[in-house]
Amino acid sequence: MIATASRLDRIRERLTRAKLDALLVTNPCNRRYASGFTGSNGWLLISADDSNPPKLATDFRYLDQAAQEAPAFEIVNMRGGMAQWWGELAKPLGRGRLGFESGDVTVAAHKQLRDVNAKLPASQRPALVQSDSIIEPVRALKDESELALLRQAVQLTDEAFAHVERTIEPGWTEQQVSWKIEQYARTHGAEGMAFESIVASGPWGARPHARPRPEAIHEGQPIVIDMGARYEGYCADMTRTIVLGDHDAQFPRIYDIVLAAHETAAQMVEPGMSGKDADQLARQVIIDAGYGDQFGHGLGHGVGLQIHEQPYLGSSSRDTLEVGMVITIEPGIYLPEWGGVRIEDMGLLDTDGFHSFTGTPKLRLVA
Image (cartoon, rainbow, N blue to C red; front, side, top):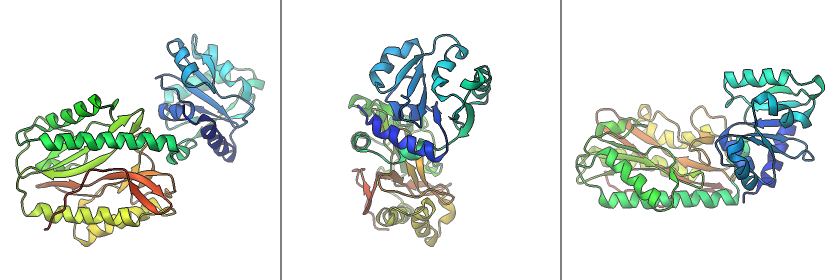
C-alpha cells in the first residue's frame, strides 16, 4: 500500500500555492502516484480542501480494481458518455478553479471537457485552468517505498547486464543482445524493460539513442549498452560501454575522459545546485579534453515511474536539485566514424551528495 495520505497532502499544498481549488489528473503516472490505481483508464479529481474526498472516475472494466487499489478515493463509474458522469465528478467544486494537466490533455479532449463542462448549471460549473507541474515536483522527491522499488529495479538491471556480459560473443547481433537482456530481466522478476534497450556497436554507437540492429557485433568495437528493468512500475537506467576482445588505441583515451567526467560529477553534485551547474561539472572535463562538441545531450535526469522525469540536468535546465531526488549521471562522447562511449549510474541525492544504486563495475583502463 502506497503512502497515499502523505502524497495527497503534498499535492494539496501545491494546489493551494497555485490558487487552485482542485486538480483533474489524467497523466497515467501521476494518477498511479497519487492513488495507487494501475488501470489504463481513469481520471482523478483531487480537491485542495481535504474535507472533500478525492475521486477516481473509471469504467466498468476497472471498478473492482480501482476500489481495491485506491481505497482512499471515491469511485465514479464512467457509465455512458462524459456528459453522464462529469457532473458527479465535478459536483463538489461548484464554481471553483479546476486545474487540468495541459501537458497531457489533447486538443480534442480539452474541447470535449470544455463543452461538457459548459452544460453544467452555472452554480456547479468549475472554471477550467491550464495547470502544469503540480504533481511532477512532488514525484521528484522519492519516499522510502519508492526508493525500495527503485533499488530493486536497479539490482535486476545489474544482474541482467552481468548475465549478458558473461555470455556475449562476437557474431551476436545487437538485437540478440537486447533480447537476451530483456529475457533475463523478465524471467528474474522484472515486469518488463523501462525502455527498449540500446545496444550500439562500432560507429552505430555514435548515435546516443540508437536502436539495436540485426547487425553482428565485431571484436574490438566499442559497444554502448543502455538498459533498465521496470519493477512494480518503477524504472532503472544504466549505461556501460564494453569491448569484446582487444580494443584500439582510441578506446581507452575516450573512455577515460568520459569516466573522469562521470566521477567528477558524481563526487561534486550536491543539493541546492542547479541542474545546469551539475551538467557543467562533467561537461567542463570533456570540453577541457577537446571533445565538448561531441557531448551533445544533458548530464542526466530524474527517474521514477517514468524513465525521464524531473529534475533535468542539462545546459538549459532551470531545476534545482534537492535531497530525495533520484537522478542519473551519464556523460558521453560520440565520434561518428568510430563510435561512442557513455557511462551512466543512477542513484539518490542525499544531504552529503550522490549515492549510486548501480552496482555494475566500470572499466579501469590506462590510455
